[in-house]
Image (cartoon, rainbow, N blue to C red; front, side):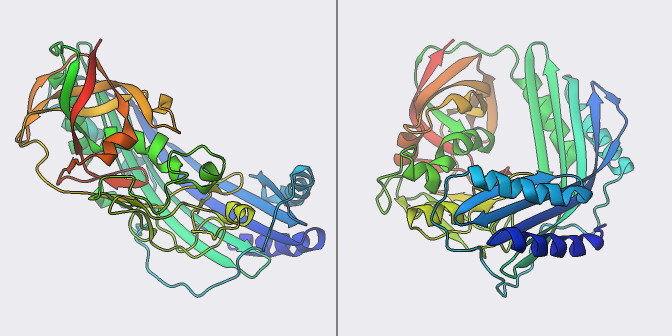
Length: 431
C-alpha cells in the first residue's frame, strides 16, 4: 500500500529543513479505508477513500514551528510555513529531538487479513441488522468502517520509525417507543468484531429501557458500566495526569504526586504494548515504556511529551500522541484500570449503561452532574426494572478515593481498558 517514493521525499524534506532550522522532524502518513452506513434498515453505498499527510516540525533557537499539508508536492511551502510559525512562537528551553534507538518488539495492531473493501463493510452492516432483529426495536442508523495505514516519523537526529496499523469499527442505534439504545465495537483485527452481538445489544437496550419507573431523589448504590466510567476518565481523570495541566494549575492532582489520592486497591497503567494504541515510540520519537500513573492508590507519575518536559525541567514519559495534522499532544497509549475485583451486582444496584454530559464536569475539582442513560436495576447478572430519566451528581475523584468494587467484566473503550465499577450511596436526582 505504501508508496516507497515517500521515503525519498522525507529525506529531501529533512535535508532542506537542516538548512533553515537547527532541527527538523517529519511525520508522513498514508492510509486507505472504506465506510458504509445504515439509514434505518437500508444499506447505503460503501465509500472508499485514501488519505495522505505530512506534518513538519522545526526548531530554531528554541522557537518551535509546525505546519502540515495533504499535498506531497507542497512540501516546500509546508516547510517554510513551519519555520514562519516558529518565528511567532515564544522560545523555550530545548534540549534536542531524540535520536534512533534499537527498540524491538512485536506489536499486535496490524491485521494482515484485513482488506478495507466495500463487501466486508456491507457484510458487517448485515450482521448488525441480523443481531438487532432479536428484539422489536427499530433501527435508526448504524455504520461500519475498515482502514489500513502506515506512518513514518523521522528527524534530523537520525530517527526513523515506521508503523503499520489496521482498524475496524461498527456501531448501531435503535429505538423502541421513546427509548433508544446504542452499541459499538472497535478493534485492530476483523475477527475480534462480533457485529451481530453489537446489533443485538443495541436493540436490547432500546427495548428493555422503555416505560421506566420514576425514582425518588436520594442516595442509591450504582454500577457504572465501562462505557459510562470511560466518559469520566476521558474528560476528567486522564487530563489530570497531563504534565501541562499540572504545571498550569489545572489539575486536581497537581500537589498530590507520591500521595495516596485514590482507593488503595486502584492502579492505572499506561501499557504502550497492549492495545490498539500500541507503539514502540511516542509522537516525539521517544521509546515508550510502561507507565504507572496510579500505583495502589498513590499518584505515581504525570505524563510528559518532550516539549513540556523541557519547559518544566522534567523528563519525557513518552506520552506524546500524534494525529495526521498538527504537532504532538500529551495523552495515553493504552490505559488499563485495575481494582478490587468482585461480582459487583451480587446486591441490587442501579446499573448505568451510559451518561450524558460528562464533558461539562469540572476538570479541576472533579465535580459533575450528568444525565443517566439506559439505567435499570440489576442483580446477579439479571437486568431488572428500567429507570426513567434521572441525574447523578458527585465528585469523580472522591468516588475513586473511596473503597469500591470492580467487576470481573472488562472492556476497551477508546484508549482505556476498564471494568464496571460499583459505587455505593451516590446522589441520584429525579428529573
